[in-house]
Image 1: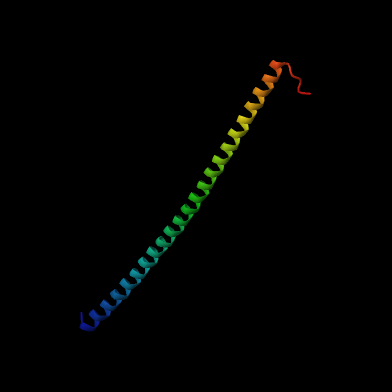
Image 2: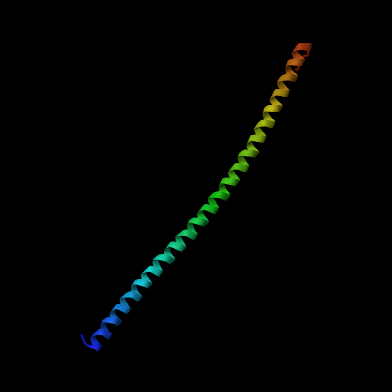
Length: 88
């Protein structure tokens, strides 16, 4: 193989390696972008979950308040009945 042929072969190998590196860089960048998108999706899901938990807590508190009121009303009605009071 002559020096010129070795040079041309080396240049072809250099070009091939540059293309391969470019492909790897593109693949890596796609993974980074995908990872960032997944991280953003996870953050949004976490925020929605927290909001849902807050709503559930608020609804549970409302439910407890209504239950307490109903119990008080039932006790008041029982006391009236025991006293013989008419609630009409």
